[in-house]
Length: 208
Image 1 (tube, rainbow, N blue to C red):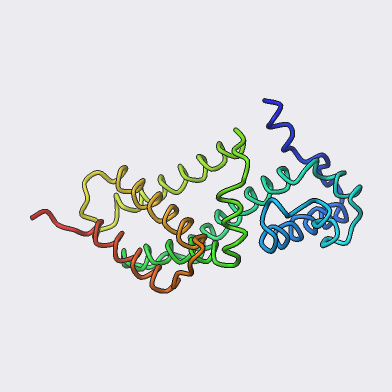
Image 2 (cartoon, rainbow, N blue to C red; image 1 turned 30 degrees about the vertical axis):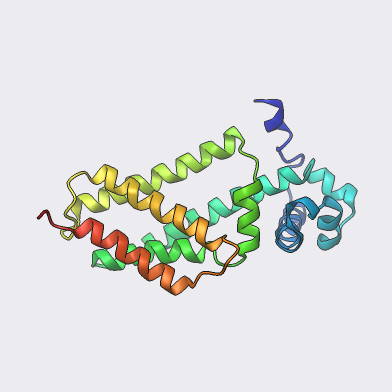
């Protein structure tokens, strides 16, 4: 592993419930601090103060704020996976539009809580090999899921379902990331409706 990657590793992996609670307090505090002050001014001192722990205790868990932000991004990715798994467990709608809407709405909901924090994660998060590998893995899982769905769904008219799945997944994720994190506000209901219309019409369009 490269030295830069090692700088982003947590120093302490919690083994007890109390240590895990402390780690979560640090991450929650960092999320608030980065959202309020931005990344440059979101210092470890401010994070420790917000978490109500000493700066020495913070450094027992994380060597620097880059490592904290990297773990916040990992938590964000894991939350997205968990949300999608809940959707699958609850059962998908029968209509293609309903399924696309569920996917889009889940993506929007996973990004809407704090646009300022999302902007920090998009623009400032270190791109380690481990983090990039996790992003790639999550995207491959989504693409494979939707490729299989498109293969069997009677409303889908595209022939190349592999490419269609990639277009659907990457388009939704990129648009949601960029527009929710944009400095100017976006109406999330309109965003959802337009994304659903765009993807559904592409998948159901007949050759003329």
